[in-house]
Length: 74
Length: 259
Image (cartoon, rainbow over all chains, first blue to last red; front, side):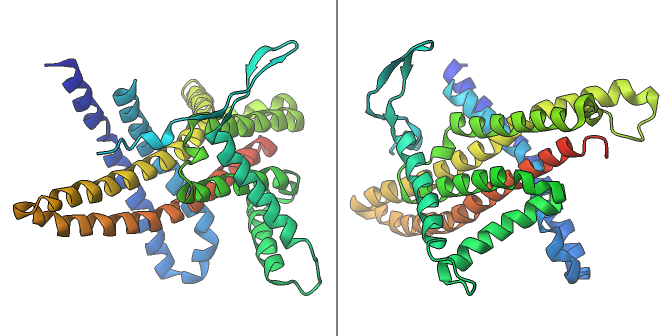
């Protein structure tokens, strides 16, 4: 296989890491919505925690994205 | 198709090589990144100069906006860190506004300063250095209790302490990469979709079967509009997330023994 082709395949494979991040972010928002619909009064106060969990989970997907970029452009 | 990475290239607008005694030759060239950051800082300063120009007990429109942004971050800092959070409010507020201004300007100008790893790493390094300095100054050596959560039995220390140390060291890395990755990814996606519009339009110009490219181009155009709207949300959310995480990390430093 040509090295150039292997590079592109590798970059594509690196993006698979985003699957986990996607599942995680979905789980966070689904959990928040379930809780928020049962007790809408308490939902507003948890916005910061929601965003915090979202950011920490999303960071792993971003790592996969950056890894893909590193493979492509270095 | 045009190269979607072209927008992130640094262009030197004015060459400026200075010789500073003690440091040697320093490259202080004015680049498009410098210009974008200067515009963002000027806008923030101008906005607050205007908002506080005529301070009244019954606030005008500008003053209400200024006060609500102020109160938003003040609430954030005090709700996460507690009463001591007031001391860190200026730092968090400055970071939030500067990042928000750069993110939003990136959607209007051709250049996003926060899509440069050098910029985001500087912010993350500032934050983590402040966390370490504040932690050591407030708690002394008790700061290292951060790496040993209370309630962990002694026979698990060998496992927990390395994990906590690594997670602490990864904080500045993820803090900088999150902002950088979000901005870079969002703008690349925008330009790729915009490129579809042009190439499908060019296909349709050929006539014949190529006319099928017109609905495709319209679809891609709709995608660009939707993505731009999403990017405005992301621009705010990432600035907010940066502020929240700065507060959380500072909270760890202030209350090192209590978790």
